Image (cartoon, rainbow, N blue to C red; front, side, top):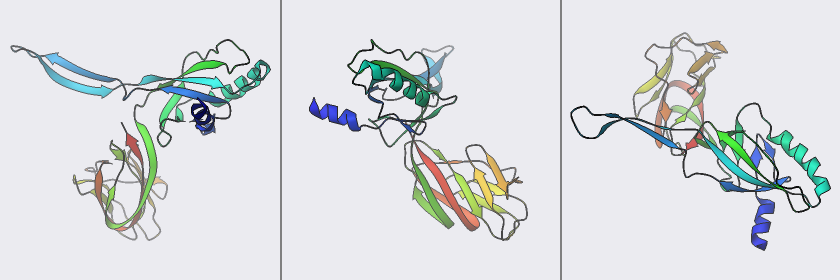
Length: 244
């Protein structure tokens, strides 16, 4: 019990950049993975079904929280301060003590009723809705000149953001040599041009203005061990690990 109590005192709970640990300790109940929905359709003239699609759904994550209060007269102050930290008008990063290096994009949803307010650490169950079932891990960064090979990390494909200084040229291309997919800027660039690419939003700018792209450009993701090539100059690649 003493070991458990000390662990609860040191476990970190972070939501939307706020450390809640000084107000609460918690017990987490989470699934191995998000709910999986597989769909099938009847196979005319034969037994069984054809597989159609599979997807991971959003879900509710319940976290039991105990207020770190010693007297009931302290509860109101702690409750108001905790409410201010839990409130968000959009999903925000949630780190929980059982998996402190990865976060979920979460938002509080539903009731947060406290048990009876006594001198013995009132408890509430806070429900976070997880609309995006992916876990996000370490932010990674890599400088590239010419070609590069690197470990992406995570168990899911990751989207890159790219900041490049191609130098003076008539076009600039970044290629995933594993798949031959590429994104190419097709406009004159100077020695001071800066190209920025967001592969998740499929958006590219040159010096802050929307770039002209090759119509065959295909915004790709990277996974496992990636092989990337740039046509000239230097580029910085950034991404976040994504996990099931």
